[in-house]
Image 1 (tube, rainbow, N blue to C red):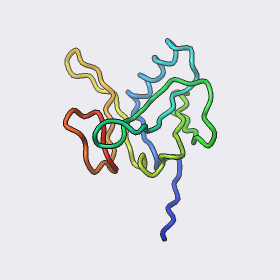
Image 2 (cartoon, rainbow, N blue to C red):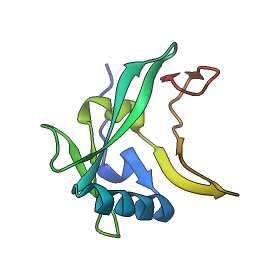
Image 3 (spheres, rainbow, N blue to C red):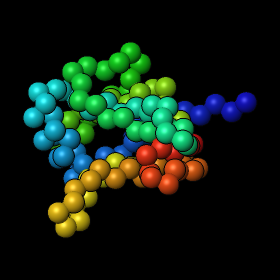
Length: 116
């Protein structure tokens, strides 16, 4: 059996534009951090869940961003999130969070769920 170790920087990268988006969301919600986790859903297996929270859940990994935003990463899903990049893009009038996860093996046609 192989044991993998992770550092906070390996697990999740948040681009500057996504960090600014998170900062605006937190100001509006009055919360203190963004929590990233996975939830069983859809036809393929999992979906991303990003919630505004005041404190981490037990065992969460804390990742402070350069702009002061805190991101909590659910430690139960570190392996599935390792290497993931969260970006915030603007294309015309559309603004979207874009998640690039190198661990995704399959995704459903509508893009709602994925498997690792």
